Image (tube, rainbow, N blue to C red; front, side, top):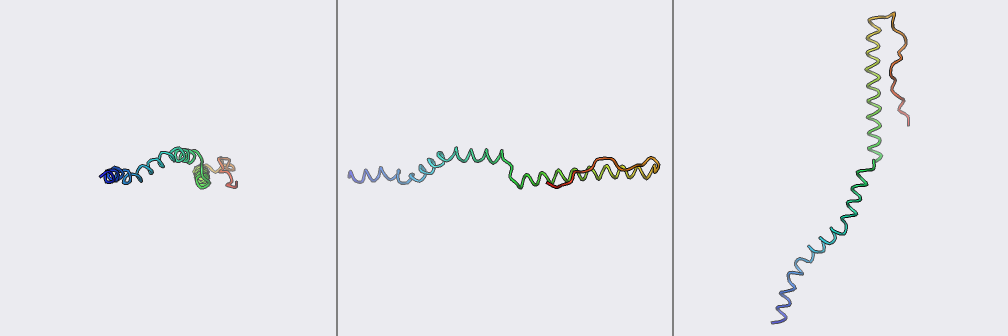
Length: 95
């Protein structure tokens, strides 16, 4: 009788042992995962940095193209008042 009672009392512990261990593991690893998430959010990967650089270069080229078209249009209307293009020039993309 006593043996059956001990076995009956141990049964819930055995059934929930994995859940308790997983919860303890999750609590123990939470600071590490949180720290990793912060570092990922703060740092910029090389791919992200390259994408940003390409966007900046494309935007600068578009600006130069827009200003150059406006200059050419002005030159077509007034050829005498048209000198060399001295507007915005996109920087060369070399790093």
